Image (cartoon, rainbow, N blue to C red; front, side, top):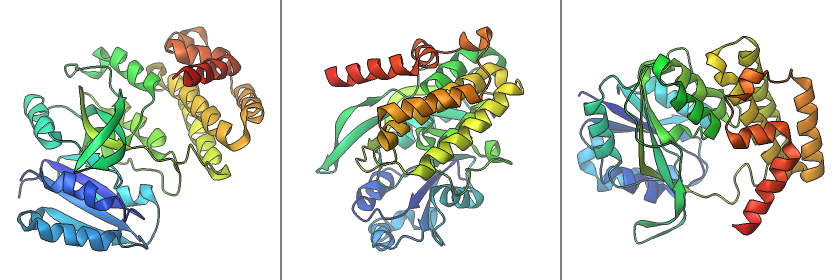
Length: 328
């Protein structure tokens, strides 16, 4: 069985969402793709529902597998799936999200037209309600800048700089050539795992294709990390910040680590706002800026306007973001 794409779906406490998730996958699953469901020791009935779903689609029995592990977290569940993947490409789907119609057919065409692509990135549709098998969209998540032809690394710095400035490192918003994961895995036991791995895969990629069509429905989670953060979430962002600064100081990534450092610091502020409140979050952000050496002029030039404003004055950025949210 020749597999082009392995889609990895970690499952943990998603009893209310897993049926919609798997239905969106199985009703369009082609014969060149496989699905790897990873049971991360889920204590609810999610896996039982998944097994029932597979019985509804017996034609896919040979191309859907369920891996079981003790609860080790999202990163290790994804890593387990990667270890068992047979496809030339790997994709991810969170089990409370859904695939939009055309996910496989559009990606199949893009891969056929661009056989040397290392990454194919795409947009997503945000939603909070799901009725009659359809999402009720709340807006498009502009993860990629627009359709672009694949380019070799030394020719696509603008695309990389745009991606790093957007800093929308959702693992599920791309598919990846499997060889990019050689000696690269999600950091086990940490949150914000996408920030710590996906930029590294972008730096390894020689050819990237982007598609501005939304292919995934992203369920807005009112109980997510950024809405109810814990101290360990801030610690994990500090860990990611140290890694970005280390790459910056070593001069790696053609200056892209400088962007990653600033956007990770910005994420640290935004999460800190919900943990500390504005005054203490801004104070910690200032202290973190002082801990690391300042950006040189050439590094600042790579920042987008919003990121340049944030780096110059986190307070001004916060006030403008708050005003924008109030108006929105």
